[in-house]
Image (cartoon, rainbow, N blue to C red; front, side, top):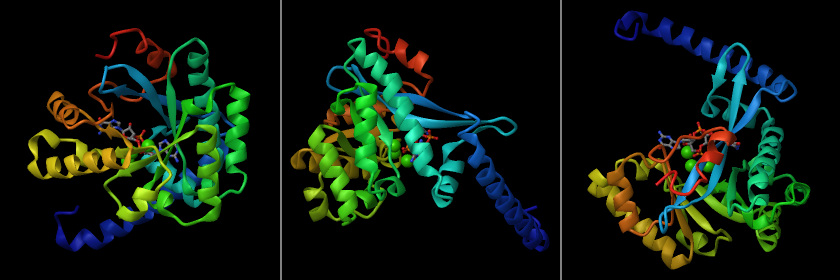
Length: 278
Ligand code: C2E
Ligand code: CA
Ligand code: CA
Ligand code: CA
């Protein structure tokens, strides 16, 4: 219908109405989904570029809707954020991730799990306390937990947020800035940021071997990170050529389809056998 000029308006109006309906549908279904146990967590391995070892995983929420089937996080996370439902979902992911990765740590695997944290969670005055409680309940050392926050959250001058970060880092929890390179970054603030790692966004990483411009940006970020004492995680690595460039430029850790997509815990466990992902 897009091709027929005169119909365009009607088409987009109908499409917009459908989008609104879909959104409302997702919101009301989200409210029941936690109780109905429709959420799960998948794990995407993180691989050390120093020795090829699987050093951990990023925990990513999955929603299997009884009628819609799997709903991608890109579709429901923004709705959950606007509807104020993200703290409950976030807590579910944290608990599940600590429980499942904690079981592997207890069996002697040296792993860290990275969990995405939304700004709404960090604005809650009880957040740090909740994370501490959950770590204790899972019996997992705090250094095995990494929390991923966005650039805007990390730079925010909120006493509550900075208080949570300071308190949790004192315990040993690690913080990383997610999607780095997509937002506005104040270099002076970045230098003072209480974080441990930068996660270079997929848009910079994917195809880097074939783009001089991307190479310049990635090289600059990696050397900036190194001089500020941050580790670097490159995400969205899909090809050997990109990987070779990133290793040569000194990235610390990689994540991407080249190694594995996010998978259920039973599959992730098989990656821990020596040599499995190299
Ligand atoms: P993100 O935190 O940047 O997570 C990385 C996304 O990139 C994941 O999508 C992952 O499956 C995808 N990905 C990983 N490697 C590759 C690759 O090589 N190629 C391509 N094309 N994609 C790759 P996913 O699982 O669909 O999640 C999308 C976003 O939803 C996440 O982006 C994050 O912002 C949000 N999200 C997911 N789980 C949670 C959660 O538990 N809490 C919160 N607050 N947000 C979450
Ligand atoms: Ca993330
Ligand atoms: Ca990311
Ligand atoms: Ca992203």
